[in-house]
Image (cartoon, rainbow, N blue to C red):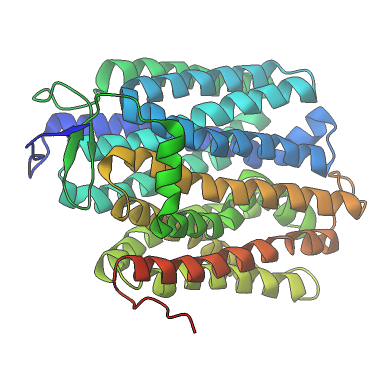
Length: 442
């Protein structure tokens, strides 16, 4: 690694905006792919004759691959840049959806989810890298928030047009159509996106907190990079922040929200889709607000933003679970809005990763951070499915509101564990950077 005296332009040109737009559009499609099963979860259970544990296994496998690929993707990005990584990611997702379209059995469908998870893992960190390489450092936090915000539109695409297409046509046509879009986007990404501006002759790693730019000239030792990133309490704070904030919303949207609202709460598909749409829209509205508050109070964002988001989600779920009988519509909307705080709050984790890691391991630290939320999500999704099966309510014919209530309690330990580690690592981080005094041992 060697430093060079290059500063990003204070005002990005049209090409930077074009490249970012294509990258964000690819991310929207990635989110559509990621949440496609959740929008048609009941249909998937009927197609594959799957009980709740097996249905949750689809999402668990997908998220496990996504989480497991984050660190390798970070290292590959540090080495090769965004263009080839996003292109390969789009091809893998297209292959996964094509396999899903023709899969005759659960085993083949699981292979499809593996391909989908691997491809999805490549897109978001690669788009974040495009932000770092094509935009000035001071715009980094805002552009990251906007990237996450716009990407969430993919959930609406999965929820409404995709479900409508499935019910109007067939399973094969629906998932085959998504596969075709993936191939088109792979071509678009390869043609339009470039790793770095033309005035530079190498891909770069940019610390968006300091503006320091370094040319990537050699592969980073994997073990050293991961250990060095994890050794800093700021990275561990980022990991636990991302572990704790978004998993409940992810589990709700990717798999269990639609069955809970329809088979559990007794809502129509249209009513359930409206509630989940409110979740998506609320997240898009809250994103810039939480991002701006995070910018204004960088030393207090864990206690002022992250922990309150966790508390709001847990409180809303507990109220819904303890209420006798079906929840009123207004309370389900409150639940959706509470869950929506998790996505924007989870983006604060990337600010921690960026702030506390040098540029040459920025993508590696981002990968470690991003893995946290998906590890928690796959645990939650699996435990919810297992709890339904253990109650004898594991198929669409046997789903019940009481069974769902007990199953969703599986999320509470994850919130408590995550919040505890956030408080611990926040204190360690503040000591490390000199904001709090070192603890004196008696």
